[in-house]
Image 1: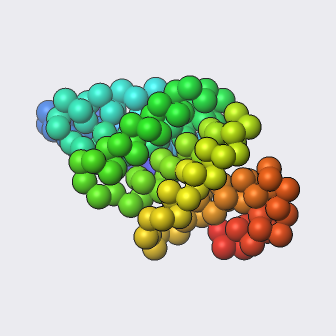
Image 2 (image 1 turned 180 degrees about the vertical axis):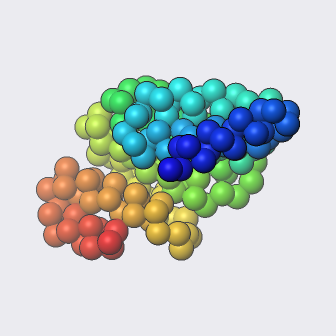
Length: 169
């Protein structure tokens, strides 16, 4: 249902020539693709949409596109693209404006990349960065805590991993 509504809205914005609305809908379509486990589509859409947001001068759009591209690339197993996009999202979320959601999500993806590469020290640093951001939103908090649980599990600290999973709930 969401995909159909967004596709309809996209057609309307295209007809109107409303570039920002079109980019926002395309980012939402990238998120829907990711939620549907269509990670290649999500990555392609997020990267293309990020370029459009850049042309439009939308820092928030660029940040959100890079963050979603990082997550989709990670899910595809492309750690190089995931790390590059997560670093871009983090930079945009910290230098251009204060975006706690973007800071937590991008730091969590960078920690996940480090964990996938077996670099527990870097993963711990990134989890520390994510935990240093004050944020009340459930989704990025859950991602941060599940990433911390993975870190604790990789380090053999089972009780700490279980505590993080409990916090993520």
